[in-house]
Each structure stands twice: as C-alpha cells, then as structure tokens.
Length: 394
Ligand SMILES: Cc1ncc(COP(=O)(O)O)c(C=O)c1O
Image (tube, rainbow, N blue to C red; front, side, top):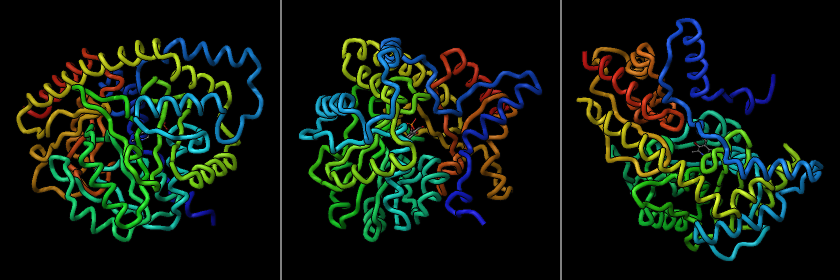
C-alpha cells in the first residue's frame, strides 16, 4: 500500500551485524574484535568542535541558507583548488549536504528509473538504499580478481547507461583508482555521454605516497563528485558533506532536493566545516595524526592476514581503511551457495571476530570478507589475527 521505493529499502547489513555483535556481547559477556564498521574511532579535532560552539554562541542557529553558506562554499573552492587540483569553480558549482550520504542519494534520485552501472564489489548503501530509493536499474561490473578493470566489459555496460557510480579510494577493497584508470573510464563515459557520480569520501585516506585523483580534474562536464567531512576529520556524526559539479544545473537541482527534504544543513555545522578546511596548521596536525595511526593498523592487519595460509590477498590496499581478502579456501565445496556466503563469517563471529560478508557488496566476491581497521587499535588487531588463526587453522 505504501511507496515501493520506501518499502524496498533495507537497513544496511553492516548495521545489522553490529546489532548482533552488541546482543551477543551482552548475552555471553564475550568481547568482540570489531572489524565490521566504517565508523572512525578518533574524537573530532578540538579546533573544529570549538568553531561550532563559537558559531552557536554567536547566534547562527536560524534557518540555513539553501545549498550552503558562502563561507563554507568559499573554503571548499579553496580546498578543491589546492588539494584536488580542480580550478575555476564558483559557489554555484557546490551544494552542501547532510553528509556524503545525502549527496549520493540525491544524485541517484536525478537518474530515477534509468540504468546505472558501477564496479563490483560496491559499497552496500548503493545497493540497499540509493538504488531502491531511486528505482534505478543497477548493473554491477565485476572488477578482476586483483581489482583491476576489464575495459571491454565496462564499455559494453556504459554504452546504454545514464550513470556510472565510481568510488575511489574504494570501499570495500581499499583500491585507489589510478590517474590512468580514471582517464580511461572518463574517456569511455564521454564517448557515450554517460554521467559519472564520483564518490570521493576517502580522498584523504591514502598511503605510501599515493595521491587521490578526482575525475573532475579532467575535461568532462557531466561529473558529480561527492565529498564528506566524516572520514577525513572524524566527523561521522556531524552529517556534513558536499557535492560538486561543473554543470551548475545539476548542483541547483540537488540544492532544491536538499531544501525539499531537510531545509539545509545547520549553519553552525557549516562554520565548523569551514574552520576544518581553512585552519591548515591544525588540519595538517589532525589529519597527519590520524593517518599515522591508520598506517600502523593497516600494516599490522595486512601482514597478519597474509601470514595465514589460505587467505588470498591482492597487493596491500593503498587507500580508505579496508582490506577485502578472499577466504574461498576455507569454504567447504559440498555446501549450498547460500550457506557458503556466510560460512567463514559465522565461524569468525563465533570466535569473537566481527567482519562484513562479501555478499553485502554485490553479486561477486561472495567468499571475501571486509575488514575495517577504523576503530580497532593495534592490540585488538593482533588479538583478532590470533583468533582467526586459531579458528581457521585448526
Ligand atoms: C564509499 C562511501 N561513500 C560515502 C560514504 C558516506 O559517508 P557520510 O554519509 O558519513 O558522509 C561512506 C560511508 O561509510 C562510504 O563508505
């Protein structure tokens, strides 16, 4: 009886896994090693918190300006120029949103009922939330085993698609799409006039001197890039993000969509965001601190998983805070497909190790598990690896 678009949405399985973990911890008193969530464990840097409190004390508590305050938009333009090397943008190229999530949801809504494509594995929210909400026909294009791209397959799917969803650095693999890969992707989309929705939530979480490359650095108007403060500044609960396009008609439509559903992002939150970007000294200190810790965790988790015979790992992930190894070796051959999807996941849950099963990320890579190290410290990672060894190698 109600709108199918709403009835078809499901709560992210990742949230459901966390709920099971909480319930089991309470029932059994067992501590879990939490590799399942994309939550960032650090506190929001104090200079950002102070900026929000100042803004509230100054009375910035009225209805916000639709689409974003000029102070934040100017800070974003400066950041896009300096960090992303995207030049020539003006405030109308930007719409401030409630996190990256709202930007993505509204961008999918622009292509309601059309064909969209994206690489698999694909972030679960795309499949569970944005696609049903926009009633999009979403075709998954599997990456190769080493997470490289099959360009022939890409072209054959992009040909009649209205939208390509691209995510770099990538959740769940940690892959950074290289400049060369992005150039080829954009070239194919340009050929068929397919729009690109570029999800750059993890743009600042890159390792080994590798830099994030945004498709908007290339000369193609039909790109919408989505950014967020959540991951870079440990501001997941603030719900602050923004969406950028060289095509102002698109950012205006998104602005109207945002106004319709939320009436805008609170001005005090936006002022905190402006300070996060503009106070470069404190920003560097904060982001470098987070990155140093992520780097230690990534190395420990990667080396730990690699030391377990049978787990297949492509090269070390260069971005985001995920590792997505293949556990096929540990799945018995005589069980059904349905059972095999959860086989290793359940074994690890029983051992007190929470991960996310591969089928959350689409139709391929279903024997993989996603490990997030965003909230797990070194000691917990070591304990997690030891529990996995005991469970899988006995
Ligand atoms: C790939 C990807 N894109 C976008 C987001 C959105 O983050 P937020 O809505 O907190 O900005 C996330 C969050 O986990 C993500 O993993």
